[in-house]
Amino acid sequence: MLPAPEPIRVNPQPEQLPPNDVEMSLVDHLEELRQRVFRSLIAIVLGALACLLAVKPLVRLLEEPAGSIRFLQLAPGEFLFVSFKVAGYAGLTLAIPYVLYQGLAFVLPGLTQNERRLIAPAVAGSAVLFFAGIAFSWWALIPAALGFLVSYGADVVEPIWSIERYLDFVLLLMLSTGLAFQLPVLQLLLGLFGLVRWKRMLSAWRWVVLIAALAGAVLTPSTDPITMSLLAGAISGLFFVGVALVAAVERFKPETPPNAPPPAAAG
Image 1 (cartoon, rainbow, N blue to C red):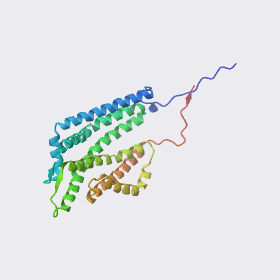
Image 2: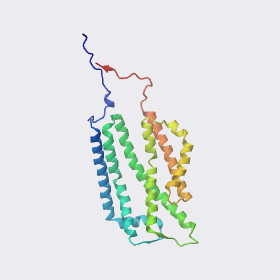
Image 3: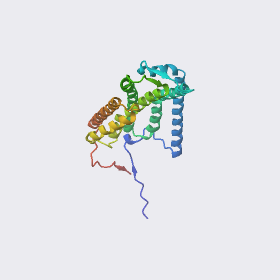
Image 4: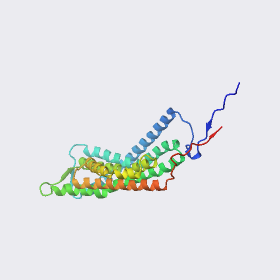
């Protein structure tokens, strides 16, 4: 009687192995995810509490783009709720790097070394672009929007604004712009994993411009044409930056032969 053949073992390439090849069950993954989400929430809460201690200077800073506009508290306790809201937004902004780090630490162990080298810079770039979006809204969008809204009715009404509505407008515009600036990171990830090539992205530029115009209308709280145009132009420009990044990655990325033989099997 012939002996049973030995099982064939396939030796994966070293670069395809996860850097920390530790087998974890689904329950272990969920537990780790729970811990990292909890740590992120703790960081946001601590950041908000720290900002709450200096909330009045923060509110004065956010009032600066309005110039000489007078602000009113229209209901009892309105400024108290505004203080919590400002501290929450500021705490989230301060905690963004740590939250991204926790997400990166959760994802990296399951990736190959090549994917690990690509993901880490993308996450760092995401944080940079988020703060760049906040800076763009602070230096360009908010002054343009307020200037248009004040000058439009300056000869008819005296502008006296609710502090809550004004800060809702400013904070929402800054947050939405920071999120909109993530477009190049999304494009880069799609290109890195070979899901979309840069020529295919570029061929859809007309649709992107249309979507950018719609996004400018949706993400702009004031709905004035100047702010919408600035945000739509920024999103369109970021799209072309993302296309250039994907093209550069494809240029320097080693090509894989389409009919490459599978790895040799060892007995």
